[in-house]
Amino acid sequence: MPKMKAAIFVEPGRIVLDEKPIPDVGPLDALIRLTTTTICGTDVHILKGEYPVAKGLTIGHEPVGIIEKLGSAVQGFREGQRVIAGAITPSGHSYACLCGCGSQDGAGTKHGFKAMGGWKFGNTIDGCQAEYVLVPDAIANLSPVPDGLTDEQVLMCPDIMSTGFSGAESGKIRIGDAVVVFALGPIGLCAVAGAKLMGATTIIGVDTVPARLEVAKKLGATHVVDFKAENPLDAIARITDGRGVDVAIEALGTQTTFESGLRALRPGGTLSSLGVYSTDLRIPLDAFSAGLGDNKIVTTLCPGGKERMRRLMSVIESQRVDLKPLVTHRFKLDQIEEAYELFANQRDGVLKVAITP
Image 1 (cartoon, rainbow, N blue to C red):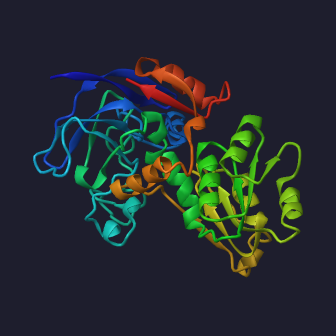
Image 2: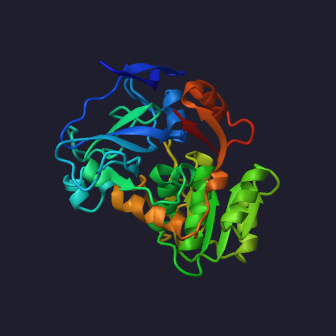
């Protein structure tokens, strides 16, 4: 049986490069030969044992590649075509999909109401940090890459761009809104770009890494706050003349940033939470106005499916946003363990890494 190289979860603290069989292709599947992929913060949660997955699973959920083989029932695509697939791969026919929430697909789970059923790559099926990946429900999930766009230009679409933009979308940002984004990692930076596209006119980015603050300004932040130099809530009060923000986007997944997001809101404002949390959260009584502040807390798992991918690539193709600066480091698949060490420890100013087999 032909083999391929893949980054495999062995145990908490160990993701190693090893060999696995190249997957067989079912009627609804497509086999993609990966040309570029990346490492996500969620993969680091897996590495650290903070999010449980099965031992032996191939990690990764952000594929750019070429169709190697199509299942017998897959129509509308051709072998040799350049495509991406979202990190979320909805079936298109589950109850969740037909309710308009494909990210919560739930197909194949014992209890369909459980969350995150749409996130399969590197979670419940083998993922993308490999030479090949099998895309399920290919008709619903493959999206052709427009001519003229490079792998690195579309590399953020499967997850980071989709997630960051969805933080702005779920917050229902309106023209003229004031928005704060807590934590300017790749997702937070995409949330800044999404807030600008949706019409926010005051966009405050909070972080402490100078390079990230600079990228945030390039992507649309009107103000940046170094939380080590100034209390972010004091800065937000000053910038908004004491009004507070209409929408706070939390893009890290900690109690501190979650609570700061609540405290930054005007009455009736919305906290849009994108963080992956590894411990229980506490809602302080005063920050929540004892439940009487008309505030909203919304959570989002990044939307997937081919139409979402088409829309995101259209934004890039139209030059409304340029996310190339997010790719700061490049590795071959053979160097995946080195890439994990760099990314997990946030060394050398890393934002995102490009992995090429």
